[in-house]
Amino acid sequence: MSLLLEIKCPKCQGVGMVYNSLWAEWYRRRDALLGTEPQPPEPQEPEEIPCIECEGTGKVLTEDGHTVAALFWRLKEEADRTREVRERFLHKARHMP
Ligand SMILES: [Zn+2]
Image: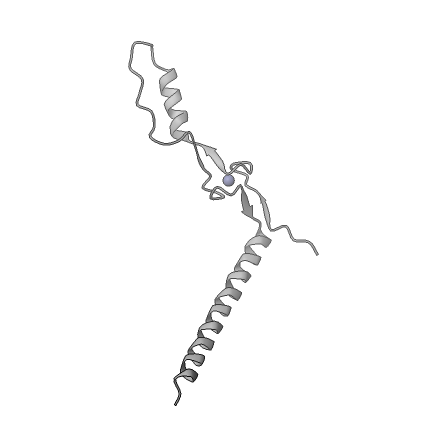
């Protein structure tokens, strides 16, 4: 059995960064100037920003990936609960007369 858990992010094509639309707008406005007008102030953000879709990783989970991730988190929660119970038990045992 083979599972495809991640695919290349379709929004950034796997790069993890996307072009900042504020800059596209700035270039559009600058190129529309007549030459005598002052340039509009540059955006105070980088031209490339991390992709929101993949949080900059360049990969997104498939449906199977989401299923496996959900299972992983459920198992982790269960393991955390088991460890807590065990620690409480050991703490009590240590303090018994
Ligand atoms: Zn992306």
